[in-house]
Structures are given as C-alpha cells and as structure tokens.
Length: 435
Image (cartoon, rainbow, N blue to C red; front, side, top):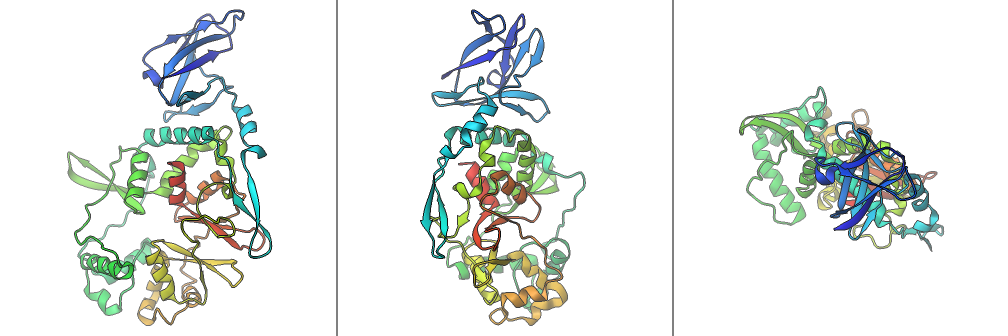
C-alpha cells in the first residue's frame, strides 16, 4: 500500500473525496489544514494502480482543474491519480509544469554517428520517463477496458459473407469488386473447379512449402468477439492470434449467431485517438518524435541493434520475389525503392486482387513479370494506401495515420528526398503501448 495525499485548495465548509478506489460508494471527509481555511487534505493508503476521483464540496461534485483530468465513457470529467510501487503521481501534481519538465532536451540523449552515406544519423537513446509511460499506459488501459466492442460498430455498415462451397474464382472476383482482401493466385482452371473450403486446405499446404514450417492440418476454431466485450479483449485477441481482424458476433444463449461487424486494430486505434486527443497536454509521450522511441523497424544507419531487418524491393524485382518475401517474412506489404533508396511505392498482398481485373492473373508468369509491370497494368484499380511521415513527427500523429481504414503501416522517410528510414506498423504501436 502507498500513502497517497489528496488535497483540495479552494475553500468550502465541508469537503469529501470519492473515487474508483472505493467504487464511488463511500465519501471520505478531508481535514482542514492548520493555518489555512481554504485547504483540505487526507492521506489514504492505496495499492498501485490508476484511479479516478472527485471532490464533493458543500454537497456539489467538483474536480480540481489544475490537476490531471480525464473523461470517462459516460462523458463525466474526473481527476486521475497514478499510484506506482512505493511512489505516486501526486494529485497535487501540476499538469502544465509536468509537461514543460518532461518534454525538454534533458530527457533524451542523441548519439551522432557516421552513416554509410557520409552524413550524420541519429541512434535514438531517449531516456523514457517511467512516469510518462505509466501514465499513458494506465489511461489507455482504463479506456480500452471500459469501452465495449459495440462502440466500434458504425450506424450503417456492410459485411460480405461467402458460402464456403462457392467456387474460388467467383469468390476471388467478388472480393476484388467489394473488399480488396488478402488472397492467393491460382490458374484459371484451378479457380473454376475449387471451392473456398478446398482452397483453404491448399493454402495450408502452400504456406508449409514456402515457409518450411509445420502448419496445423486441423481447422482452427473460429476466433470472434461479442459486442459487449472490451476493446482490450479484442486487441489482445488479434495480436495473440496474429490475425488482422476479428468478427463481432451476437447470439442469445449461443443460438442464432449474427455477424454484426468486423473489428480490426485500426478501428480500435481510431477509438483510442478520439479519446486521447483531449489529453495531449499531460500525456507527453504522445508528443515525442517517433524517431526517438523504441518503436518500429529502421534502417541500420538509424538503429544498429534492430532485431529484424528493414526489407525493401526495387521496381526491377520480379513479382515472384515480392510474393515470396511477403510469405517468408510474414508481412503484408513491402516498400519499393529506387537505386538511391528513395521510396517509390509499396506492394502488398492485397494488390494481388488488382490482377482480377479482366482476368489478368491468367496471362502472367510470376518469374517474368517485374513489380513495375505489375503496378503499371493495375494502376487504374490500385488503392492509394501509402502513408508517410518523418522521424520527427509525433507518436500521436503516427497513431492518427494508422487509424485510417486500409492503413497498416506508416513509412518513415527523409522529408526532402523521400529516402526510406523505417516502417511503423499497427502492431508495433499496440506492442509498444502494452509493454
């Protein structure tokens, strides 16, 4: 337990305190401080955690506007206190002073080293404040656990459902026309005679051959969420199962299940961004440049200790090179660069759907078609999903970009040359925020 003081400095006859630490069920009376008729205080033993609280002054609910505030899911404004270990983020803490003291140059250290291009590059060694991280993660956790999946469902939306016995050629064209989802390439003859059910068996075998890893033969049980589950549950389920989306299904006592929505990480992140937008003043970590955070995948001249390399391809690489790299690296998109390493485009698994136009997939050979040719013949139907920023853009700005539909990654470029420096994905952001 941590001794945590609560102080009201604005006068009154009687001042009480209530909060989430006691379920809002009890009012604790604050004691007038000697020598001041306006100041009331009470010290309470609390376990580590993040709590909302409010004062009751002469029978009226009040918040201290000079301290950290938050809006709950009902639109009610409350104060926040963070109790961590044997220390606490005091409710007497001034949010504006906190912002100025933690966003200065002393909180980060930038080491200059020589790059292969002869210019200076930066190896981020930012000293992240534990308090900054704890505040952001506690606020985020409170929001994700309090918000329900139902809040992601738009007032009107469209979900495409296919019978598993429909032939794959028809499904391929339907998904091209409607969804632009992930898919694989078959010959025209194969597509015409296989059903979606049999195609899924082929897909398992194909992944086993390409990745040379064991893939379970049995069908994986459907992973889904109910409309009353929390956003935290949905995000965790998507990340743990390495999937891109999850169906939201409603049923009564397990009967008559109905598909309501398809939830994805970008939808969860958009909900989070709307909530955090009003709290940027004290969530200072959101204002830090992404180039100074341990986040994403970077070129070697910017991060020498990356666990995974930054993968790129050139326009002259074959389409087969692109598909093989997508499968082996288990990623959904690859940046395409010119000879100078400058960003030209990206090629994604979903771009394969563009080949459904006029049955183009029946006339190509993967080894002989270059990425440039594949882009040129589908230029009229490809979606523009390329989102870029610089390493000096804030974490919140990157989160906003990633919350847009169909966006799974933001490519970090040098502003003037568009030389690629790194990639930050949706999963990178969620893993960083949940450490």
